[in-house]
Image 1: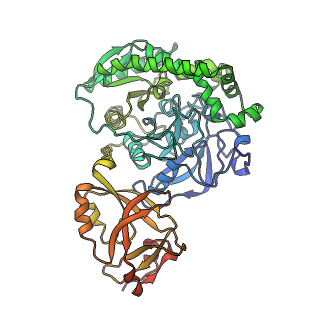
Image 2: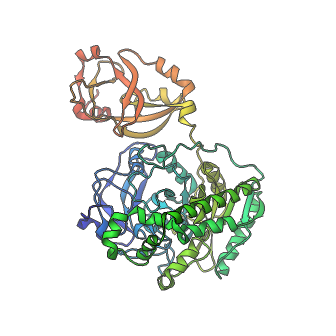
Image 3: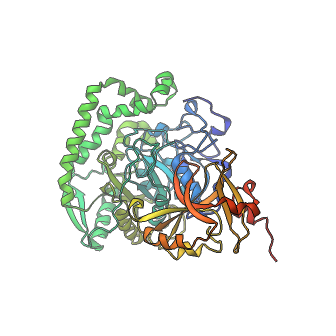
Length: 563
């Protein structure tokens, strides 16, 4: 990576966020009105990505796939957040830009590596934030700061434009004050991305788990001497039983052994592979203990890596029968809280303790959701994590929504009470029964013909642009409509449009409403995807007024006056 750090990537006014001078994002879309921040190992176009290391920093020309999707969905991006360097840690103290404190007590760790993202959500500075999760970084900070941490199934969110920690098991994670909001964000940003080698199409479970929820509880619980955390977990189990859950003790050994492989075997070599070219040339510029953890990778051979992979696969097989006994595995998100001073005195051992219930989840290909549970007598938060096989993201969210609502907790460390929010259902798989439609004119949200979409059950996915291949005209119609054509002379432009998802069963009746000279064809988007969309026959342009320079129908309409 080039080392072209600018002054804007130096520590900001706080150790937890570097704010942009101007918030980024569009004005419309399903996430309109929401503000968010992203962890600083996730690219934002024209702003430095540091990954917590100034010497590593580079300035990307484009935003990460996930960031662009959220901007297209109408969310406003306010800044980038601090992290444990190279996303290596679960505590939030491993950054040259400063330690991120716990939102409830400056003396305690925030949890990491997505420490800054959790902090700004817990303190109400943003509505949601993106983190990343390899070993628990999207869950531990949530549990320690009284917020929700949604760790999606691997490959559900693209990691294109994300500095990897261990690329084969990395996920982008979502922090929010409540589960329905985290789920809304996931719906807006998930989807297959051919540019990400680990992206995949996952058909999400669309029904809740059984009414008689079977909850697995580890037979080897360890709180590392923290009796307060142990007592809060017992309260959480009582709460689950009050919800009708059946608690089942399960052998924790396979999960524990898998967790130990992440840092205690040749699998740690993937940390070195992620930043090899930089690390091998600038090892002295990486802070301890991150340097030690990555450097130890050199001690392993290729044979060691295969042996570790075989061990992991054997543990995956050993865990499979347990899922015939349980629907969900429930664990403490973190077994204890540590002070920043204690963590700095023993950074390797105590960090490993924080990952006791998290390190195995991505390795075994599970989905997970960390949910606030209670506030301990000492004023520190306690959270639980719901875990289930890949594709269970919505089913976990359904349980998490009901559980969180019963706690009576406020949002993060604010005075705002948790409000009831409806959990929207998971999307119908696009390949089976829905179609994406791009609209550029009178069918845009708020425009005269938008009702034709809404009454057919269509939902707005995002606001984006076409590829720079089109020309745009105002037609002489009632109501006013534009005409979009593909330029044949290579002098096209990008035109603003909305992408709507419509049930396939209603698509035919929608197309039947479209009058000449308009029709449906294939539109190419700015990101290279293609969708169904409105195009115009060329004969209608003889009496039309070209409006390509406005870049979209809304911008053009704002210049028109009516009597």
